[in-house]
Image (tube, rainbow, N blue to C red; front, top):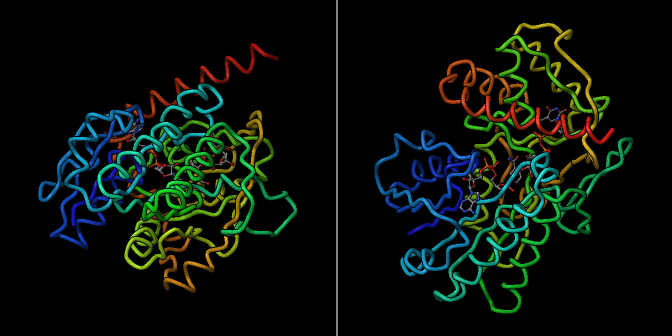
Length: 337
Ligand code: NAD
Ligand code: DAU
């Protein structure tokens, strides 16, 4: 089978390509990635067989015309993925996540309705109240809070519309927060680990009471594989990693303990606007496709901490860029006070 993976130099896309080729060594993967700040060519530097990298934009119709005639399956990861950056520059999220997905869908339709799997997020469902134990499921109405989640919600609607209107063979996964190796240090878990390595404080937004459902990235890859192989066309599957969510403050303390540091490293800072809480029911993918996560939060965090401790050359320059971004965002917030 010939796959086009978009955004395959980012965090989840690169883990997915590595996962897929290790389990399907006779398949051929083309990785189309624009190489934004979030990409790192080192992620797949050791992958040589049945793999081609093309630097380019999912909005480039002429480039898609060259790649798609030889494609059986599109796995679409490419996106602007960071909520805090969507507060800074929402239009970029509309361009990449909405127009980019639309452009890819149109090309998939043009070349004989290519099978299309879309990677989406639990953020499209909005927020669960702080004192509630409710969970999102496939039937939860969309209610996005940030420009990022609004752009992902819009992309999901276009994917379903192409399925219904044009018969494009689509599936969607809406997953919770991923973590693991190769995640950009702008995101909470790698930011915490690398701050602790650098002897810096960990900035916890608000009172740290917001909660998430953490999913180890390899478990996400196996969920995508299950949906590609056994999922019903036109369907959506929610993917989560935990049975009970974790409040940010508890997660931060777990990482501090794993790294042998003190809770004095915690610094409470101004909250993110429209700060959501997420919890995902993964009953449907378990019942229908037999998928469940293999990693516990403890085992996944240990692997992640170990990876960042031994890969400083991978994360150092990305961290410098990320912290410059946060400084700019904070200066802007202070100006508005
Ligand atoms: P990431 O930011 O690490 O990587 C995104 C990749 O897309 C980068 O390599 C970037 O260069 C590429 N890209 C961006 N714009 C592009 C364009 N116009 N054309 C081609 N390539 C482009 O993202 P991630 O965390 O790996 O997330 C991947 C996907 O999974 C996204 O669609 C995201 O919305 C979704 N998702 C992520 C999480 C998470 O916790 N990280 C959870 C749920 C869903
Ligand atoms: O739920 C899925 C989503 O998870 C994905 O769709 C997004 O692409 C991905 O970035 C992630 O979004 P979050 O906003 O949940 O991730 P982030 O790592 O930015 O933040 C996780 C939580 O930690 C959130 O409650 C905000 C908080 N936080 C984050 C940072 C970076 C802090 O308290 N301090 C921080 O420095």
